[in-house]
Amino acid sequence: MKRLSLLLLSLFLGTAVLSGCDGNSNKTPLINGKMQGELVALEYSELATKIENEDNFLIFSTPSANCTCWNNFKNSVLASYIREHHVRAFTIGFNEFYDINNIKLDTFGITINNGHQTLAIFKNGQAKVVREYVTTHKIWTVRTSFEDYISELVITPTILDITLDQLNTIYSQTSSFTICFYDQESASSFLRQKALYQYALNHLTMNRLYLINCDAVGIKLNSSQVYDETSWSDFKDRYGLSTVNGLTFGYGAGVVPTFLYVEPNGIDTNGAIIKTAAVYLNDVLASEESEGTYAILDSFYTSERLPSLLHLDSYSQTKILKGMSIPLADTEADGEQRMWKREKAALHHDQLLNAFLNYSLPLSEYGSQL
Image (cartoon, rainbow, N blue to C red; front, side, top):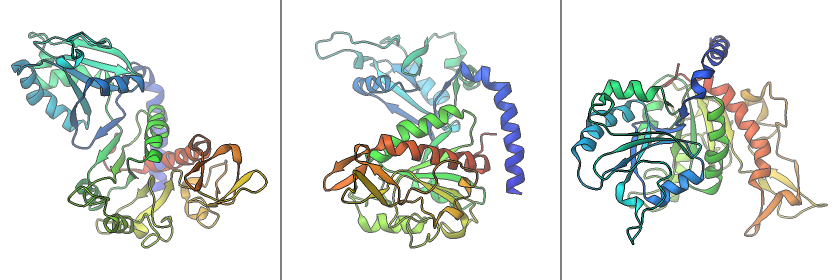
C-alpha cells in the first residue's frame, strides 16, 4: 500500500510542479520554520549576517516606543498566523538602525519609522517586498486579509524545528514521518546551511521534514543547561541512533546529523518502526596515510547495511563509503585526528541524503503539505 501511495503521489507531484511552478517562482520560500511558529527579535549585526548569508525571511521593523498599531497587529493577527503556518518571523527595533553616535546605518531597503511598523520580505538577501503600516489597510487589522496578502508572497516553511515534547507526540501517533537529529556543531551547521537548504529550494512543495536540536535540556543538557553525557547516551539509545536498540540503522554510539524515516506504532521509538536512515558526514578515517591516501575505516554506508537502505535500491552512484581511499588533499587535520574535508565529503553525502529524502518525504504523512 505504501509503494502504491508513493507511485500515485509521485504522479500528483509531477502534475503540481508543472502547473504551479510559475506562481511559486514569484514567491519567497521561507524554508526554515518552527512547529508552533516563532517571532525572533534581531540585533542589527544579526540582520546583517542574514543578509550576507543571502537568507530568505520575513521581518518587521518596529517602533522604538510602545505602539498600539504594532501591538494590536502582533497579538491579534501575526501571532496566530505564524503559529498556524509554522513561520519563524523576525523583528528589528527602530533604534537598531542607529549607532552609538546616532548616525543612521544601512537599512538594507527596509523603510523604518519611529511611529509604526514596516513589513519586509527578503529573498536571497535582497528586500523583495517592503510595505509600511497604513491605518486604512486591512492587512494590519484583519487576520484573513493579512493571510490572503502574505500567501501571494511567500511559501510557508517545509523544514520545521520541534521540541522534545513534540518529538514524543509525533512518535505517539501512527502517521509516518521523517526526522533529522542535529546539534550546533559545525557538521550540522554545514548540513543545514547548504545541503538541506538547497534541497528545500529545489522541492518547494515537499512534505514536511522535522528537525530536533539535540543541544537541549533533556537531550544533551541537564536542567542546569550543562552537558550531560548520560542523558545524551540514553537519548541516542532510546531513539535508535546507537547500536544499543538500533542494530540495523544505529551507527556506533550514535551521531548527528542522523535522519530517520519512521512508520510509528504509537508505542515504540526504535526498532522495526524505523524503515530506513541516513547519516550525514561522520566517516572515520585511518590515523595514517598510505601512498598519499587515507582509508575510510568506518562509515554508516557499509556493505553490511546496504541491503537495509531501501532508499538506495535505485541509486546509481557510490553507495558504500567504508573502505574508500581519500586523497591526502581532500583531508585536513583536526587535532590528532584526520578528517575528510566537508566540501569533499559532501560530494558523496549530499547525493546520498538527496536519495533518502526523495524516498522518505513522499511517504511521510504526518503534517503533510498536500
